[in-house]
Image (cartoon, rainbow, N blue to C red; front, top):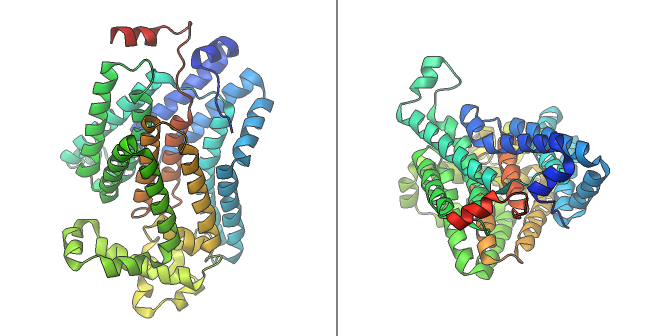
Length: 430
């Protein structure tokens, strides 16, 4: 599947000013996502939707609907597209055996709409951000982190004074995770290319320091884990790419397959002393929750309890099949483990489709050079690590953040042209 599009300068020359401005608006919205998430921590889907409108409008005014439709069809026919489309269809069908189909439909929309926006932006053929937008993304991440950490240092006093939103410090967990995911894309785009400068290297160092500061300075233990996994996998992939890719693929497949017994494995392997050291991360609580939801998953092993049932699983008929000592934990809302949530709600069939999609994504990375593979594999591994210990699997802000990061990484690299000499000059004088 070839998703490449024309260089940005060629798009400006061929499309005309209106489509170019619309595409620039869409890129600016994607750049602004970290800052908007700092202000409103569930806003990523809205930002992505607005960017989609801009890019689709740019594509339609530039070349009509047929080229975009052909590109969209190619995306949907790809192995990843077929697997994710199949999972979305299964999730929708599973509402038939859900005890709360309306609730499940809301969750389905929250999951599917950001994915659809990402596919529409790719199909528009207008997202070719270039190095300046990549620098702007890195800057937006750094500024958002500085604002968040400043607020944490002052006890969110400004929000309290202005009576804006909630005053609990955990409200920054979502934007910190969004910044972490997008940082992999910014790193990949600024690190390589013929026009990279010494300033880009300095900017990248500042980006890594800022993201590490946010991940370990916020209340999100998952962000700290994700940062460590991304750094470890990225470095390994840089020097041993085949080993890193094989290890991530094996770990991903094993985690997906063993999700229903994750609680039993954690209970048997993790000593009490480790739980004491990880008390702030609630590791013991997570294992207990995994044990509880694991019983629910094994009670409906093939098709699950229905998409979006986790928030009220304590009121689902499956609750009667969970052992009484663990039954009360079904009311926590979700298992804090995306593979396990997929098993609970869509059964082995849904988990298999997601596993295939993930492995197909990794298979597409195998032909990349080590320098290009490293940030992409780091993003995959870091995102999966976060999803395996943290929030609900289908939350729209998380899907939108991942879709945005994937969009930045799928954009073809900038190609210097005669009509855009500035970046080449920067490389010469950098």
